[in-house]
Image (cartoon, rainbow, N blue to C red; front, side, top):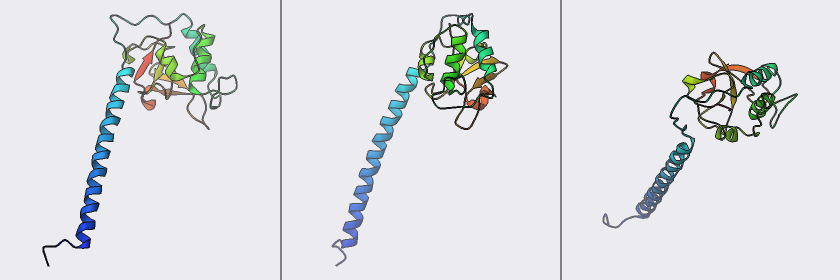
Length: 172
């Protein structure tokens, strides 16, 4: 009587087997996700330079002045000014005033210029969080940036540390 499995034991064994399969599948998925993340981060690693970064484009001061003139303008998704901006719309318009044409996408702006160490930032540099597809601002000096943040907010000045800036490029 005690040697035959009961219905509860069979169901329990099935549940345990199902749970083991689920955990194995989840573990394999986690390995894939981590692998993809590592591969993606390798694409975002700043390119090592053999010397100092290039000087900023001559229009850097004009780009910064344009961004400063937009302080208080409302954020709007897809906005490229003149009445409202999103993050890449602001940097695109600022650098257009400074003489460079940039695309209206933060990731594309990151990809088109040489990388700069945060310790070597100059006004006019574009600054990004660890995923440059998510946000961009324009560095204005003294550890500060100007950026357009989110719906319901305005173009504002913020410290680099508040935004979690880890990447930068220098428009040249």
